[in-house]
Length: 202
Image (cartoon, rainbow, N blue to C red; front, side, top):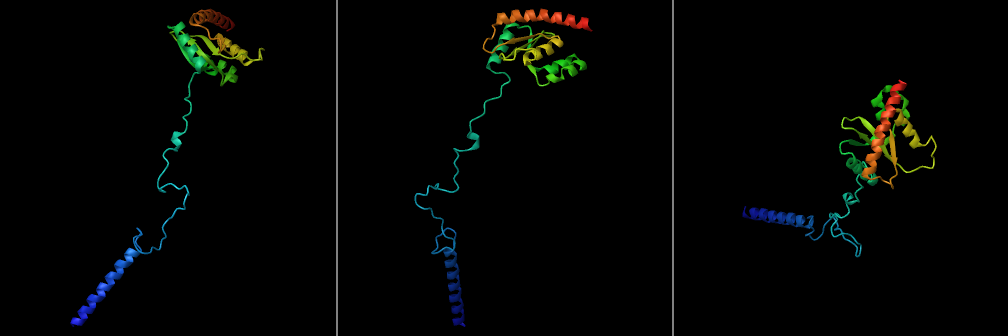
């Protein structure tokens, strides 16, 4: 009976030893003698990063050059806008107004007649303190086509049909505040004449 107990103890010790040795041998940390999964080795001078889990934080899409901010007015238009405000502090100046939108304010007949002007606009619209339109102002380079069918003349005729005088300046020849005040005053007189002609035609 004692021999049987001794044999069972010896067998148990051998089984524990085998199990522990097998665990160390096939452990994932590679501390055993041999591992069924071969370790990852890097060839010399391979240029691999120290760790495959490291990321290059210097090359993220967010570091790409930021696009230029979208602006309603370019440099020349901004200068002219502030000069208009300086020349006429009691008037209202609006930027980038569509001609078709102005036609709709007049009525359906005008909107239909000027439907071809959809997408065309004026750089500035000068209004009185009561929001009555005084004049339209554009910044434009001269074109080779100086005929009556040029885009500038088409816009001028469309605005004149609406009773709005158009003043055109060149981006490289911006007027000062005194000149603007004088020419807008002339435009007011011209507008009153256009309105009188419009009323007589009706």
